Length: 417
Ligand code: NAP
Image 1 (cartoon, rainbow, N blue to C red):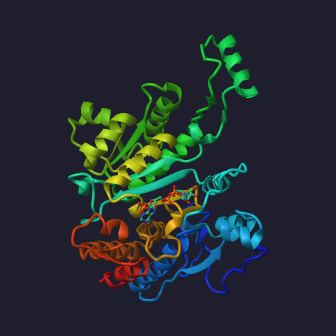
Image 2 (cartoon, rainbow, N blue to C red; image 1 turned 90 degrees about the vertical axis):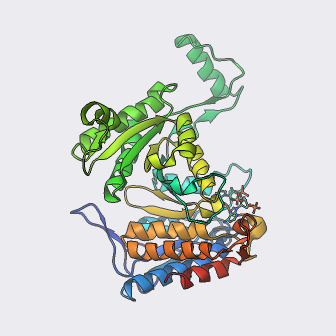
Image 3 (cartoon, rainbow, N blue to C red; image 1 turned 180 degrees about the vertical axis):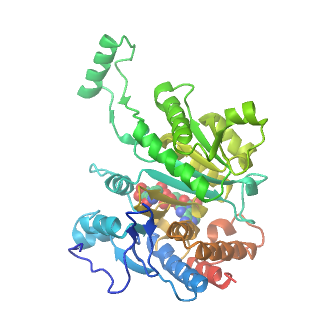
């Protein structure tokens, strides 16, 4: 039995386990789910979110299932309770209970602090950042056909230029590396350069692409696109593309067809039940999501491309307040608001809670409780159709009624049908 120093697990509820036989998670009817409320507007959005999730589960399963929430701490609240920002109790709880929900956390400035979010991802080995981008009719959008966008992005979370391996201009390390490269590899790097390293591995690539293809299979998606900049960075981004195709053909041969095969063997007609594996260069993909978003369904991409692409796609469907996300490892999954702590709105009951509510929907889908997620999607869609929205959307919508965070949550529950 796992022991905590300053938190007590709920008396009721059961843990989610991983089946040794199938390798899949086994979800009891009353799973214990740790929740990190978060800093700043975390309290506002979580106050609205938990009732929405509880109501959807209650309605979908007639009281047979329910989530038992377990409050755990990170950020400013952890600092106050434990004297540290990311206590062991919290890491232990997420590992033990497998699925968790999280609000935004402040990244303290200066003092050598690493972002808490990055620490959580690294310490829990959450290697896939998963961002679905789905449009709700009526949400203000800068594009003509936002309804064409229904993409889920799998962004590699641990490698690439985000690995944090870098040295500033003039540092001993930078000088040493530049001198070694220029002498031994005959490169011509200027001595006044900063240096950053971009590692991309077979391991990191394959486990990410595997997750993306499995998602496509389990959710009847028609294609998986590998997005890379391999025309320029051949041995990192180009290799990501190559290893991605290798994995698809080796592990999923009977379920996939490559775009190349499609042209050569099938006259561009996708064989029944097959998923098309294709690839696009990152810069071209940023155009394609604007001009022909409906040609893409699941995307797998290295860290930096994924960062740009997720925000570019989110902008089309209503921005950060509407974009959910999760960081997922082999089993452990942390569902979270994608926006920050928006400190100026703290405790004002103003902010849009959709990001974390939709992350809650992803969580319900991960648990296999799709019926509850569907009710929330329905509730959000209807609330937006009625133009009862928070300030961020109200200022962009004609004839809309501005509602508080809590009122918006209540309207979603009312509109679940
Ligand atoms: P932010 O908290 O995301 O807020 C920036 C602006 O985005 C807000 O002022 C607001 O714009 C809009 N916004 C964000 N969330 C919204 C929502 N739910 N509904 C409506 N509008 C929303 O970004 P930041 O000010 O750069 O960062 C503040 C702190 O959060 C920093 O400490 C940062 O490190 C941290 N952060 C944490 C996470 C995370 O935990 N995942 C992510 C990003 C940043 P308007 O003022 O125009 O309405």
